[in-house]
Length: 477
View (cartoon, rainbow, N blue to C red):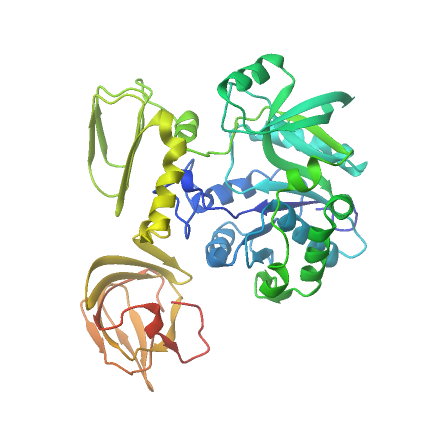
């Protein structure tokens, strides 16, 4: 690991976004980059793992403040949690996010000028050796002051991606960027493919921190100034680097392409053939998934008969599909999507309808993940909620008081350590506990297996508004 030279690579992984076209699996509070969509680990974890054979520092992750515990837990699981999470208080697109990472990197590594390898947390790359080779081939170009972008060699006439037109050759297998093109219609996409001079715009970059900032200052001094000021006043909290919201909210929102790459004279594109996909829709996930003899992708408890080129995902019920062609079915505990595979780009429109009607299904799942575990809503009514709480080993729920509800806990599995006012005691399997209104209480799992509890809340106010925290254990319920 090159920590004493200005040539070391610092991966910067963008983990924002909601992935609305992969609803109902991807939700605002649990978007696609944190899901296991292609493999045994999450997309964020896969993005980090494919860096293993590159000579880099531990990655910096940029994410929304609401996702901080998700990111921290997923980094901890793979041994990459190292005070390396930058929290955006407000989404401002990629140019400000990368600027924050650049300023922070220069602050943390004084005297060095690292190469920033900018990646998205929600992409799939099936040929990791080719990915690594492309990155290594771009290092010399970036060291020379170029802003390198990686162009994906197209395999078909795709209308869902932006394109990059290559210009004159700079070195072997590297070209000046002649033009960035917006997502084309079908006719132009076919023309781009046949020309052999266009690449899909991957949104991956490699450049020196100071070079990017210099170009940003030249073309968007407003973004540069806002980010410079925000980075000068950041604070560190455990594994998080926090940006002051009042400072950062003044920054304009803009993509790196519009802010810098379309204007700079130093843009270079390196072609990449690595089985890349941004997994931007259910059809693209079907494209990269293993299929049966009929071209079907089946996940979960699924039975199919006479289906062709169909994607079926079931989370917790049996789904039987008969005689379907080119169809997508995605079942979660609280939603069901059925769509023609050619129309899945319009799933985001369904999400907008849900948002406009303030439906919870656009924002969160039936199961909500917390720093200490998860909450699964089993049943609810006007004055009651029945939850299944899962508390991970050695984790605890912050001490709190409720003024409008009681709670009744039944331990299903594991052992609970309960603090009630000044008392502390254990509750074992098949035992229960009642928490009256106005009673200070805390709950933790002292064991080595997950603690499962059925919680019954009763009262006339069952929302987060009836939580008064009363101790230093402010982990967030």
